[in-house]
Image (tube, rainbow, N blue to C red; front, side):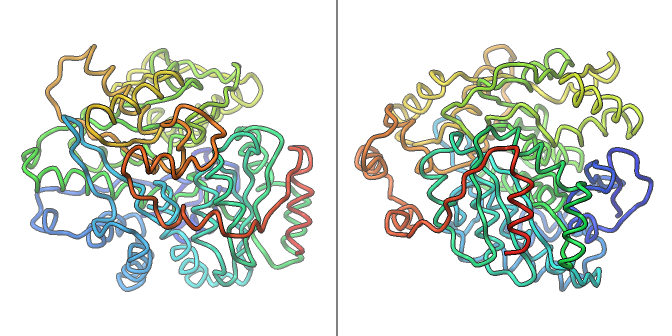
Length: 486
């Protein structure tokens, strides 16, 4: 298995090189030359632990990793740092099935991939015999930043620089980042939104001045965002694992078709679900759930992508995105990997802020259903689920629940639906409490719900603030130049 760029660079590279590069040299995203098939009716599937399944799913994608290397990465990633021994348990609540991806160290689904990415990257350094140190350059809408810094903190031969929208994350998300330990970790707030942060970061990967400075310092850039294929591949695993749990709990028969509802911003999580489907997991509909920044809802309904609209800061901030970078990988597949067509759409997006699919291309989106939830609907769903089921969900999960319910209102279906639960409610207590800015909101959430406060949240109040940089978007590059030499 090798990797090529979505934008047409013909050179095929092994997984280790794609992981180290992050972005392809032509600015495209790496995609596998083929998607392998995984037979869920093989004898191992129902008996596999999460770690064993991770190896079986990831090994074909990481063909240049030896069995020993990959198993070592997996063992170090998915260990006691996860507070649930299943790593990614499925919980039945009423008639819904929640795939809980928030039992990692930073209480968000980003831990599922960012716990293993540092080990994949350091192994790749050795395999590629790279002499340069790695500088991880990343933009975050809230969760990736903390999870990436936690994963790379004090990892030899790495430095990580994270940019986040100063007014676009929750108080808990921000404090998680600002208290991050590690001499090699740097987090910078920006006076802007996530799209501005992500666009600027992607531009910096191919900036000549930064490249010259990196060369002098014997460093090279890589990414911890889901634009890095090393982030995407590990996420495929939990879709298979969720299905396995439904079979073992006798909720479905082996081979039975299901739906999956995914809260979606940058399109990485749901794309991993699409890859799982392409690998053979029996998924009917991938339900793409957006918040008020509903550019993806319109795209899947009309085939027209248009980011020329108001940007909203909402109560589900990790989805406050208008440029969904991972959509480029899906576009590559539905255009049959035609780089000239893809480049045409990406140029239209860059210069006009919009592009449209041809009729035959739009037909390739039939696997997706799309919808969105307003802030008021999100808060209502959080309250209704708790009042009815005594179960607390975070606002992003509420979006997935609402859009899954919408699908059932308009489509006659008796298929089971997995709702992907992407974060602990303790990262966004104000949504449940119904009021922002309350003192002791974490304690109040626990008191009202009886839900135990995670240790990682309890300790935030006593941890010292270690980062305090806030800059304008226009000086992000200069900030990176300064940090490269720190």
